[in-house]
Length: 404
Image (cartoon, rainbow, N blue to C red; front, side, top):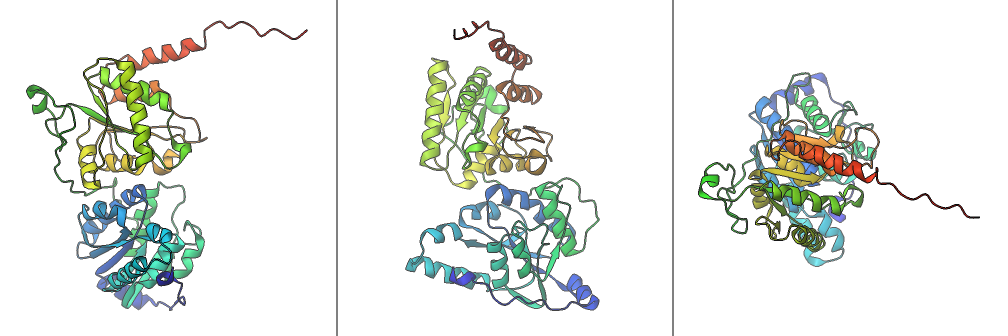
């Protein structure tokens, strides 16, 4: 893409006096973290730390257009600069796309920055960092060769910092920012997510009785208790088996919790409709049923998550957003290491899946046990499911006859 072509790498020497001046004077910071949603959620504690440790900073952020609203809901971000790399790749040679790239570059270069911090560590993000303008003592900072997801990105920074690779993704970014802004070594505590979610009303949700409505918290006030089931993922290996979703929907509805199935595109909506149909057929005339949520913008989706009695989902951006909003969550980490990505900051988050070998998807009984721990279903429900699952292996099967 023409506007992001590499330019000559400037490796200007930095003296101790220059570094001291940099720490005292810097005020305007550009964060580069363009995608994906989960990575952006993981980057939000960096902003909260900076607001706490360096309240004088003015913070701008470059982000993919699909996630602009998420960054705009984050306290402490002054200017959001949208980029459309994903869409522009599909519109190669299009005149409108070229005009949009020029407009993006104008917005990017409208300010001079004291620090451009690339927390993504990819070549594409490093090239964006190189295109941003710096003040006289400004620097571009990112991960070291060993830590950058694409090591070549380090060539485009003035400084690269190494952190422990064994840390959770959030902690790696927090430590990068702490090293950059001079508060490394300070105990920052658990991650904080300072997100302002708008109020929303969902008239498609089943309504609660007057007595129940008075006890419901969240932006979906007046709705019957509901669970959001995040079944969709772009990576098939992350998916939880369809029959387990159907069984879980029946258990939730039996406990008086409606099941809501969101979707982000036509394919995900079709999958949600299949799951809802199968579950509703099995439940028959039950009053609570599985519901396929209509399409909605990200701020409304955030409100839906914030008001849920529980969010159960595979490793996807909306699951991390739900945990950041302090909604009770049950994460299904079958294909990704939960020590690196799972929500760990909330007492309302239960994460299922192996720390070591990947590929083993959690059983329904494990999910229900998590719901018991969150006091959402009656105690003993998971034990009954375990007994039901174990019974399958106790069925006597005729031995296969040997061939003569």
